[in-house]
Image (cartoon, rainbow, N blue to C red; front, side, top):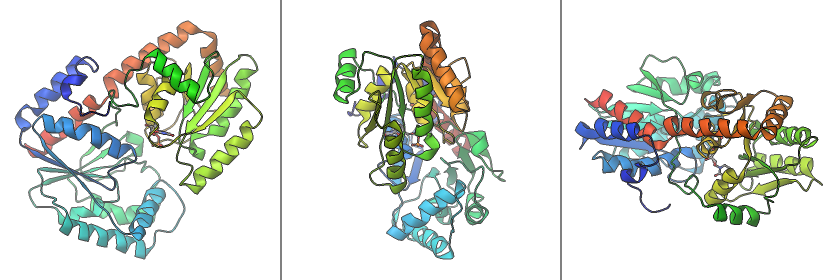
Length: 401
Ligand code: UDP
């Protein structure tokens, strides 16, 4: 659904209590100004969530705005370095990089309108904007990455900025740092009405999946992921081989991003080599806007795999759970928060463990349906955009009342 959505459209989809809570929380916040700042208007999870949520907050009478910090190519090199070194990469974060990050923030502070009751700054790229905060406004830093093992030099650069905020928000507790300001945990979310997640007729599912060259006559095991070593696509192939010794099924590895990312291209080549000669392994390199195809694949899958060895929150898990699928996920990052092992999915640590869970699910239709139904209900209550809005509205109340 690409048309503008309204809160009423969510009425029959999300828990009634959540929608009531959202409306209640917003009641005396009408007219309050809520500004978001990030570094891109398209691409990536942050932009996707803001695109979906801001019009809905607007509808509730909150005056929402979205500004984007932009800079020279050197700025993006520096912020990519911040991103990677905060997540543990052993690369230099140089004085010149620090300078360009601060300079870009100072220029952006002159160009952007930063006045708002609550300002939410997303991720490290625009964090230094806090130097320009208006005295009476409240500023929150919303972190979308894993800060559990940052390179010390990069965190030492960033931390003094973060300490000047009124609060910091993390996806999950293990990603947070100890800070002298209030810290909150807010899971990200998916939008049940977008092309990626909307309901889809069986006919459309079959048409799309067939057009992608995937047969529908056997159970489909699916992993949707960027071609990234931490998503362990090669481990998925090895697990599939173990499963196929006892069950006829096909494996689909669907992902994108390899064309503009040399590391992704190398992983994709490796995956293709591993799968070579096996007609039951389908490797699909999808364009960035293949939302309907991903939706169809997730709905056609018998089991969804997300065998990551390291993960952020893992929104593909949320997407598959929402579609009522049993998910076999690597026990890492946000996957551990979403899957309760044996209840609404399976958590695995190894290739053998992954193969075992897949075999167990393939052999037992009742188990698949039970796990899938509990996954759907878990996602409905915890992983949808309306719950996320309620969290942000509470923050708005807390900091601006
Ligand atoms: N995704 C996509 N195309 C792809 C691979 C992934 O649109 O080829 C989407 C996927 O459906 C999900 C998001 O990208 O919405 C990935 O989020 P996740 O948190 O799972 O992983 P990340 O890529 O952020 O590490």
